[in-house]
Amino acid sequence: MTDSLWTLPSPDVAESLRRNPTVVLPFGSIEQHGPHLPCGTDTMIAERLAEAVAGQLGALYAPFGPYGVTPIHAGRPGTVSLTPETFERLLEEVLLELIRMGARTLVLVNWHELNTPSLNGVAVKVQAEQPVTVVVAQACYTAQRIYRGEGGELTHGGSIETLGVIAEDPALVREDRIEAVSRPPHAAALDEMRRGTEVYGFVTDVGEFGGDGWYGDPAWATEELAATFVERVSTDVAAQVRHVLSLRTAAGTESKEEA
Ligand SMILES: [Zn+2]
Image (cartoon, rainbow, N blue to C red; front, side, top):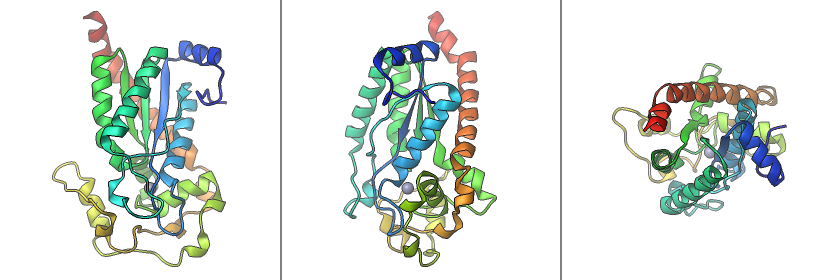
């Protein structure tokens, strides 16, 4: 069983960090996901994957909190958005507590794209000021790469998100409300635009995608595919985390310790 700050008694947490001073935390959001998926979709997927990544790394899993930064869904029932300032302050304080406890590597597993600027900002600050390495894992993009060849798409409330919820509990998906594929014109192009790495823009209200706040093909997701979702995505993420840590050990950490 994966070591967890949520379930272990204090001496066992200390022992876990002595064995491996790595802590993995999940980041998601509580927000509307159309009529067919739970508002907790992002957070429940992030928690399950982060726990599995912790297991693969022999690390300690630490909960964070269900809320994220999601102003683009503001005003729609089921959405609770934190301001970036609040999220960042909470994140920094939690990370500093974990470092005080003995953590030397922090892995932030994210399933909500709008958390990214805050995660990156706090990660850089904490790593610069503390004797620690911080790694951000965009698990949603890893899932997109894994499932793209099989027809899966990372869209808000679409096929890959539905797959992640089925992996948690198929009863949470309201199949009776999935009437058809929702594909407003330009929605995919807008996602591609805001996820660009060269020239990119921003979507500041989910209404810009058209439709009614979600799009994609939820019916693509099956229980059979969902059975291996957590294993496939977490194995891939864990391998990438190990790679990043090997680079950091080879370069930055040593020079920092010599100084
Ligand atoms: Zn989502």
